[in-house]
Image (cartoon, rainbow over all chains, first blue to last red; front, side, top):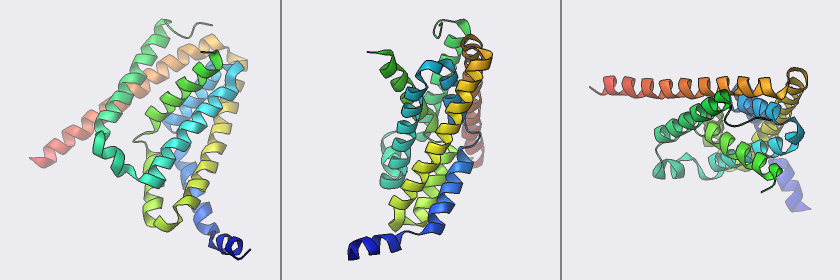
Length: 105
Length: 104
């Protein structure tokens, strides 16, 4: 009980709501949001799985940020390389979708 | 693999690629570095905020599919993904060029 009370009193509501707001505002209008929206639109029958995949990916990335810090990732892969690979994958997927190779329902 | 698992995996990989090095990551990293002992609370708050975002996105996406149709959305998604790729590529090259200028 003492432990529980200590834990509850340690919860800092100002910090909680400020980080909640920061993440919510920085996520709005982001490319992650656009991607999830379009993926959900592409497969309306499997919206639940799109939501679960998106949530799992976002939780994994924020876990990596919060717990480990970006230093571990930056030690092995350069951020520029990561962003270039991501840009390449998006371009490839866009071309494939536009030419109709994938995504025909 | 069933189509559910394929959908899950595609979304997972694509969102991880889009999210790494994005501004949300920088925001969480800044908050965490300011309040290092309370990182679990920040993780909880960011998870809830991201869940709310995903809920909004999925609702908008499936409503859009209901009114516009999946084939149109496939084409729109192609154009938008291509645009996102080109924009982040050009931005990355621009950052590198600027860094090179300031270095010399």
